[in-house]
Image (cartoon, rainbow, N blue to C red):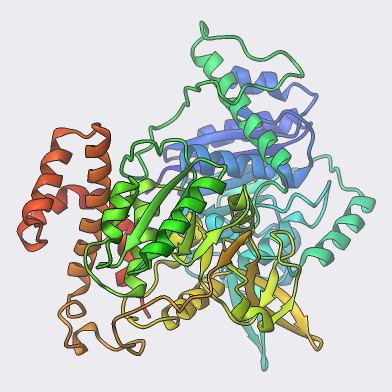
Length: 601
């Protein structure tokens, strides 16, 4: 994988911009996408970008952090770049194939920066190579490379930094906290965590600086006030900022379209913002679809899963509440763990997508819902509700989506955990910090799920599998809020009230006995638990794909292959007899399940 994204960050230094664009074109040896993040320069940068047919981002002056986020967000969202290189306009490639070292370093370490000569005296160890990068106690911002995984985990620059100073250092600190770009050095009995840096293929030139002492002081205070915030940050802080960044991206794409298709409609006049509903022809490579096609799901970003087993009255009430109180476009699926009380017939009468055929236990059933939403429907955010937990206020999902976007994962502050709350008010901006967790209702983003994986299916009882999953999420920086107890800094679970209520009912029922983590599945005499990991993956794929095929049949929009496939599964759908048929769909969705069965525990 060698396609990369290169973002050149500039402001009112046109001569430098000309030199760096020429150097990138001359010395880059692999296919790349080049964009210019321009903080509304007034020296002709826009006209230069047009003359070079390069995508230029920037409608207004928003500061260094926002400007770098422009390039990162564009290359991540529009081109899925596996490696992104950020170049400030006073840093030039100077060797043919310069990017190869940065690609290798980013893919190996997740994040790496340029060892500028001014920080050489702060280098502790290392040779500045991919295998042995410099370990430096200082940081520079002239050139940085980040992998798609690291960017998805850590997120973007914090836009609360205004003007010059500290934004790069704070971003690098979060990268180290997440384990990217981190070098550990022993100094006597002390372990020093340093930045990983290389010196490959670029050089800096003298330039005018926009450094401001007042800005540096102000940003230092900002850093002190936000240092305990969650690791992952979005490229915006509000709905207005989100809309503005997306307008900047669409404006850039429209401008590029105008260059490529001169007869196309005119660009918006100066001072106007482009319409978000306008269809855009995006330049660059065509991206493959991220999920199987589900009718009615093309524009939805919210998936709601209900976990049910033999509680028909509860699941009916929860479905009715979801449909009544949800205001955003959503896709609803019910994971039914082989109920025998008429739940299946009820769901069919209510025309609800259902996944699950046999009783497999709590962990498996929750994975059914997660897989159907993430793999089948391809949604960005997922909310899981146990069937005795229902929304009680219109627009309830907005709180959960906001909290999920900020923390990656958030759970419901159930009454059973109220005595474990250390701090917080229970809202998405100030969630509870709790030492225990209850998964009656949770929200999770696709980034967190793809990074951490699914609930371990070797857990058959209730609760323990939830705690182990949440622990793995916390280890990756999701669903974590930092608080202090008796002067001690603690990391606790992130929980909110969230306009839902849980019925006074018995816990979610499981028909199996619990098994300790790490015991091989074959140790259990149950035939359901004796399946190999490959067979378990096939079963889950079959369950999810069957549900999707049934949607297609119901909507009369499936191709002939889907109709044939659904008919075969319904009539004699054993995994062993249909491995060839499953192979046709495995390439599209099985890679998303690899973390569930192949990760080290």
